[in-house]
Image (cartoon, rainbow, N blue to C red; front, side, top):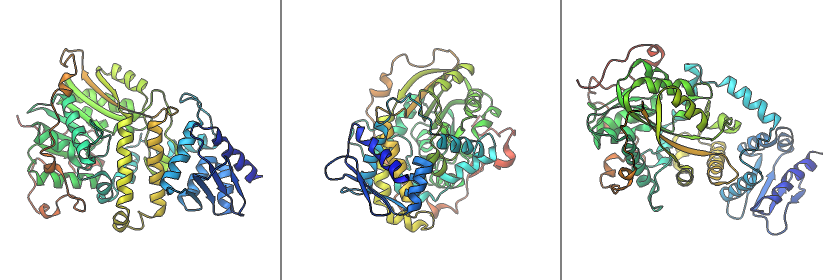
Length: 467
């Protein structure tokens, strides 16, 4: 019975737009093919158990078995392209991005996951972040390039290298912020430091970074010391929901790809605290993966990639911004840029896989490679597919209704991007941070962790900026 059901399920993919011929090989050696012609995708069930898991748990069981090697996805162009084609057909079987087909197993698993990993608890939020970002920095370095760029790059011409696209992205964000020398900026999420370094060095801003993850903070601190920016950048190991204790202290706010980590029940708290920390007329930029409407994060993504994550809806962002006097003056949907960025990241991960494995073979094993490849390919297809609801937004906002932001957007584009100083921000692959400088005395106003996270909640933050 289970094989009959599995054949029926795979047969539906023949109705997709792409219609790649797909062959299924079951554990007993029997086969099924959905379309005539040479198979471009072969799904191989290596065990009877993997068939039962797919039968009972649907796509969740199938992916779990694929991760463990009990299911293989193969093709003449390799497992990467075969998996891409399978995911593309899966997206194409969705009649509309607004249609919500309820899988009862996935529904129950997701509700349980959301309850267990909910970020309402500060300690749980920290655990969730550490599960991803506190992995050895070398992994992200090999994958994200010499600038550690982790959100959508700015592929202005389409011919940029990974580093160039990321460097232009950071400069583009600074332009959106209307940064100028002496601006007091708070950044949430360190992302190993590049955004803060550019704001301080190239634009002359004074930056406080709220970063919770020790491994990211370590790399950021080494880079700050290396570039001699201890007087302009300070790292605080604190949560965005503590920003309200620094009432109206900042001219600018920025977070790139961090709002997703607020979690389903904490988005309003984040936006409230951002508003409280900005001065009247202050400018902020938030970029995040999101949706137009409300959707739960996929169970597999929440389990293996983004624990406790929630991709907020545009409607909720608008509602909370209106409630807390943040007025959106510019909005971009950049999901195609994120697709291009993730394509490069996946290629870099696979290119450097032997080196990544050598970092820690217990972490970076075949199961890890499979689930991350699936995550990247699924995201790429999700960003590109007309049947998907996955978006990436860049919100620029002003606190209050003051006439403080340019009325046109020529300032974003009328000056060419200059990457001639990009090398100053690069860290050569294989060299994470600058450990030879670790023995230097750190400026007393700059310390790796700020106030201890566990005791910082509710405490006033000592002013950092020059008077």
